[in-house]
Amino acid sequence: MDYESYTLENGIRIIHLQSKSAVGHCGLIINAGSRDEEDHEHGMAHFIEHAIFKGTKKRKAYHILSRLEDVGGEINAYTTKEETTIHTSFLKNDYERAMELISDITFNSVFPGKEITREKEVIIEEINSYKDDPAELIFDEFEELIFKNQPLGNNILGSPKDLRRFTKKDIESFISKNYHTNEMVFCSVGDISFTKLKKLTNKYFGQIEPNLRTNQRTRIDSYITETKIIKKNTHQTHCIIGNIAYNAHDKKKLAMILLDNMLGGPGLNSRLSLLLREKHGYAYHVESNYSAYSDTGIFSVYFGADKENFTKCIKLIKKEFESLRTKKLGIVQLKKAKRQLFGQIAISSENNANLMLAIGKSFLLFNKVDDLEKIKEKIEAVTVDDIQEIANEVLDINKMSMLVYQ
Image (tube, rainbow, N blue to C red; front, side, top):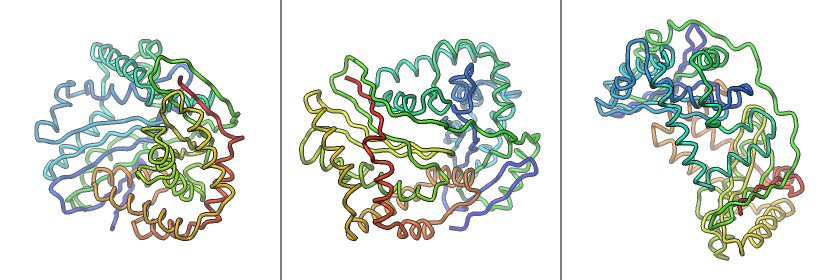
């Protein structure tokens, strides 16, 4: 795939893949998330993601929501621990409409008082609905356990108390401190020439005043294992067990992704799914997850099971960890795992909306994008020794923390 890139004078980077499709996709990824909040700002990054839709210098909230929807397109946004992303999908003739809208809400929002007050209550309802879903809530609380008293452990949504305290001045202060133009990537996949795209990005993003990052994030400086059991009125016992892992720039990251996918990835034939669900019938849902951040990472296994099967599940998971640490994979096993991972990546890249976000994040972090051939080459380079080394470092039960809802 022939990606094309360009950097505006203010530092905003552009990456584009021309695709012969009737539908276009573009977005702006900002290297600022909940871990960039100060103690009095918990929930601010996510709140701003909502607030930018509430009015600009020339549009009211209704006109923002209608701008793309009126022509069959859509605009949305999300916040993670390290990024804020605004993304759109639209018919290809509406490229300029989408780009102008993204620019307007990102750089010209006025945060009107009544709209902001109303949106605080919307987010509080979001928080309350989240608390009603233990299978979702437990992931955030596990990161709070792993990264205790550190910004990366902060819940993305924040708390009702903090939200109600935020002012327009607080919003503008966070944006000024964290929305750095040299930490933004405008990404695009669609049927538009790069020459025209450059012209449009210069028009709508090139006039933004430079705001360059000079500071670095607070690095994760400690990790202490902990087991925590919380009493909840749930039908199932929910459990996460895990450990810190490799950061996004670590050379072991890809092998860790392969190990995670093999152990508890989305495939129904993952080791833990076959063991806990298919063989023993102890759990309906079991999965493993690996998240790589800029300076650290986290690996975890989650399952939900009846209370009488909880201890049995833990024993089986620990046994699987130990097997991966002490026994090398067979060549055939590793080959199958590689083919499965590459197939998942290739299929995902067929979805242009997913591809647009993937190339944008890669360009944000690494200033480059690997094509499928390069990705396949890197996957093929992983050896059985690599997998066993990582298993010994990450799957050591003595280094793991555990959070249980029961």
